[in-house]
Image (spheres, rainbow, N blue to C red):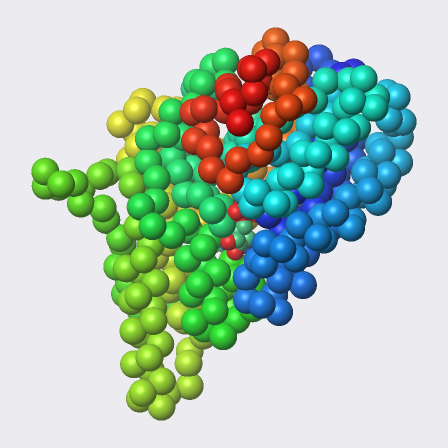
Length: 356
Ligand code: KG4
Ligand code: ZN
């Protein structure tokens, strides 16, 4: 079995996993996460300096824990991977320096992984992952993208958000409703009891300069403003905020737009399968609506397991194993980190002349 020790520190979760590849199947040997959410919740969002410091404090213990739970010693690890882009630069640096140091000390290859490639690989941790080509809806706190995945790790972005990512919209609307960070799970909790049809909300569309709309792109800022207006209006009317109905209606509006554009894109592209990954893909209403609509259109649906939707190191290890399987040997030990990097450029991370 080929084994990888993987580190993920791109945002507010410190995570370490040991992953194995045997006969083409990826196995999670251990998956440890230390969430910083409670610390950041006090500030209503992620504070980059706090995030880096906390990664630094917990990483050595998490690495020990992940190795121990996997039953592997460091001498049995074949490669060490860490997320190097995109994300908070200071946080990425903690994981990347730790991984490169371990790689040098243990004389095994280092692989710098693109965070979104990690999210894409999370579908391999489900029971029956599809074979490429397929369409992926990647919905997280930083990204909302429709990506066509072709064989040999070729990625093409077909749609994107022009403003907030879906998860960001969940977080901001939760704040307007007086709910805590991260907003997605909170809105989901209240929305379960609410009426999703009570408030009619806009489905943001992005105009083309030459007229018409981009069919696979998203915009969530109008929806956020509509929620703010509705909340202010209800407050002026001295009504107690119907948080359940507001949360359910918001969730419904986001899910409808994500589902309808994904299904349209898959149909236009002749894709037989839609895959959904990223933190927002943990949302039950979205999972149910996507499964139903795709089925109505004779398209298969593959959902990342809920435990691997939000940031984790298992998905980073899975992406590294796929790269190794594709013939990649290593990344340069001089490879730095980058706050932004398009997914289409992730091949750059495996060049021996470091790109940054
Ligand atoms: O993938 P992720 O952990 O981090 C990024 O790469 O951004 O996604 C975090 C985002 C947050 O915005 C969070 O509110 C959202 O995912 N999220 C959810 C749910 N769980 C997490 N959104 C909706 N419903 C959920 N159950
Ligand atoms: Zn993520």
